[in-house]
Image (cartoon, helix red, strand yellow):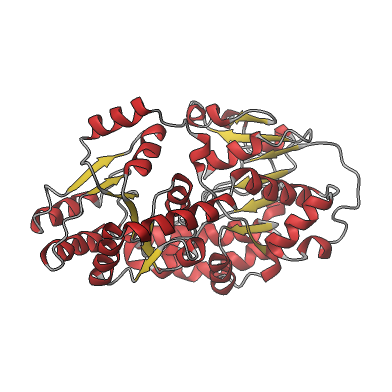
Length: 416
């Protein structure tokens, strides 16, 4: 998501705005190749010490309210809410955008993007300390933020309901496929990917880290049903980082005798990811919980037909361009996967619908929406395009904020 945003903001060369990407050296190497135009790295300098505004933040009513909500549940658990080390304040940033759940306290006006509240819906996947850590920090950063951003309308409704946030404070900014930022694979790249990963001639693709909620276990059950009951053996290639839950997945593969049918290839390079989408007969996405679902739009972008779960934000993201199934039903998943695997006409129809859907989403457009938010929060004048993007993102919130768009301001900086 951050790479996509960096790629999009780098294309906005029609203004003198500068976008600073806050990093902890030497961790800027992964983002640097995607920064150009008005974007550059801002290395954190923790040795300089934190700014002296802690008392001011403690006096903000919304932060006190957030703390009062979670304090009774803390018990003996101590949760530390990080605060700025002063880097963005010294850089003169006008707005701080936290594009992931991790953030820190700062007096600089902020945009907070928590993506989802999975810990409230799937509490069984979190230890008590993890749950409390998310609850304390998410509420604190939502309270601090001028604007909270979700990528889907489902996510907006979910966070306003559970955190009792004003509807006008939460805006929707959709994501897009990041694959435009990656190199276009050549024939040689495709062949090298197939050889290195020992890919079967035809396969279904599932790109996801092995978190429990991604639902690999139900997918394995569905593949078994397809093979044993429906007579269709579907090879699966699963990419993505293999975390601490992977041994349970590997165990289940053995129990179901799927070793020859399922291949986990781990984290792959960007060009290999594009190659996998293009070589796959279809992409299956059985996740039980998503604030957006980036692989779905990535598959649309690459012309890969999609079968995905009918859960949380995914129907909103997929629209009529994917075959939907209930994520808790391995039988329904198996039937959908077999239908997509066998029906060439269905695949062609979904590819066309997916490409049409992907064409309406781009990180350049997403970056323009975020830039309009930055300008609004910084008190900059909003041009006609900014105003239209604000209406699309969060209604007439920009017009209701006192003074927004009325005072002159010098070009400044935004940190992410």
